[in-house]
Amino acid sequence: MTEREKMLAGMPYDSMAEDLCESRMRAKLLCRKFNDLMPDEGEERIKTIKELFGKTGENVWVEQPFCCDYGEYIEVGDHFYSNHNLTILDCARVKIGNTVLIGPNVGIYTASHPIVAEQRIIHGTEFAKEVTIGDHVWIGGGVTICPGVTIGDNTVIGAGSVVTKDIPSNVVAAGVPCRVIREITLDDLMPLDEQDAF
Image (cartoon, rainbow, N blue to C red):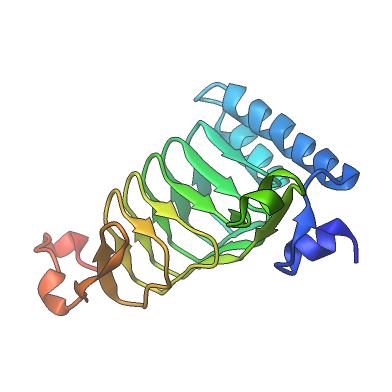
């Protein structure tokens, strides 16, 4: 297997393999291009994100600045919005569903390292685990999502949380480590003007 194949399979791999370094450089250059665009260059910003990401749906918007490792392993659905300073370490696939909102200063990390220092320092071994975020999810500001995590549909992750384990659908979850606080119910519906009702 190539080092890239090992990386995507969740196996230990050498991140300094030549083709992986080239792919990361491509992503860094595209991130730099994106982050240097003027705020009113909306069409060019969207075009650059579509070039960077592996898959994008309709109506995708990413605020500046943004950074990632590869870009090509990021998949986002329709109606995606991320606020300022999103970092995605996509050494494994990051799959994000439809109508997802991400607050500022969020980190989504698939990359990990061995616990034993010798493997980490001498051998330089890394590994990565996929992250999946379902449909209609809201990720609050300052959230950290760790490798291997799945977040279910319609869930809200409270600001400042560190998500280390899977979170089910239809819940509010928060904390360090993040845990389910309660289910989302009809009592959570906000009173809206009739014209705003969905």
